[in-house]
Length: 236
Image (cartoon, rainbow, N blue to C red; front, side, top):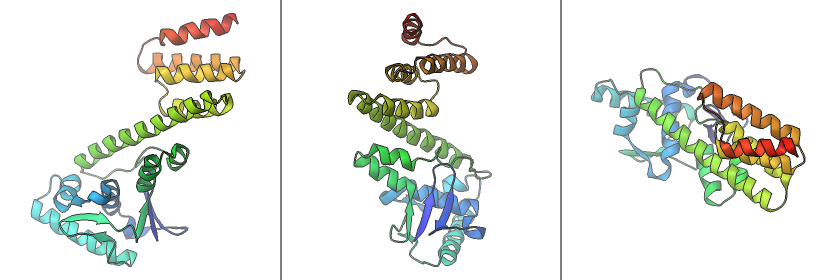
């Protein structure tokens, strides 16, 4: 069984073996990533061409796409890797993807498992030369998955706080702050969680780090709610 991993990079493996060589040529992997996100709906050949060969002659680009699909099937050793004719989709009996797993865990409400699946930004460090449309698509998907993870982390942190588990709440809020260090509400809730867990120095330290990040990145002061909380902690 093949496995495509898209979070924290882009790689293809079979069992414990990471595949290398022509089978992991950039446009071949990009096709797999595009189809992984498309899921059961699939993606038309014309869209694949538009994403990966935006400046090429359409007929020539379609020919190159057909060649890559044929070569990929042969080199992975399974002609049923791609299903469909005009609209293509990945065969789940041949290849699994972390994108599909993440979507499924979120649909089931298993947020902790979704967080575990997210190993870094979508297609982190991966690019395709002369494929601006693909790069824009990657950025859009990267933002979408990061937002989904952030929502899951916020929900987990809120649930832990409601259950009185300050330590777990701190852990989830920390993960959220790592993902979006400039978010005022996340910073505020992490400082609150640290204070509730008895770590006042840690709370003040994170508030300072957040303020420094805001100043360096945006040139703005921290949220007044956080400023008031910091003053209250200092007086305590």
